[in-house]
Length: 231
Image (cartoon, rainbow, N blue to C red; front, side, top):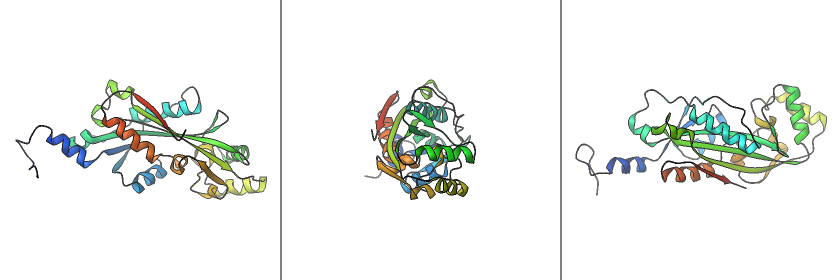
């Protein structure tokens, strides 16, 4: 039976419409790779300015989770965000780190730093952690923002052996710019980097399976929750 819109609707009708419409992801990220992954997954989203990126403490996975939470908590939501969209909106912060024996490799500062990282990674395996932190847009800016739902996905990547000439040629191509560990497996590095365990999208920068798990957890109501995927 179709329920007509407007006044006099049965209690819960608005909530039903929100559920049927699905979540609106408010992606607190400037990464084109994450936008592409959400679009390919068929999820409705808009990009918003993320909160400040912090250093974090603890293991590489811990720091990724803390940074994802900070990006979501400090996200700048559109001032004109419609009430229905705010009601179904999910603010999502994401952070990806490359972990080599418990040491984080961040984004290279310059070509020499990129060459150093690739030289460290070549001929061996390492771990990539992608953390997702989310809270309801309706609660953005409240105390609940400080206790988001957090999930950390994990994947293992193997690099083929590379000599100095191959490393220099890769760095000269410039695809290391702005990427943790100095590489993007979906770009030129795909010639020598292979995801051998976990999901490829975790390495690219956003675990879609992890996000779906997180959305289910959020649908159960407010409150902190931490999970993992691909471990």
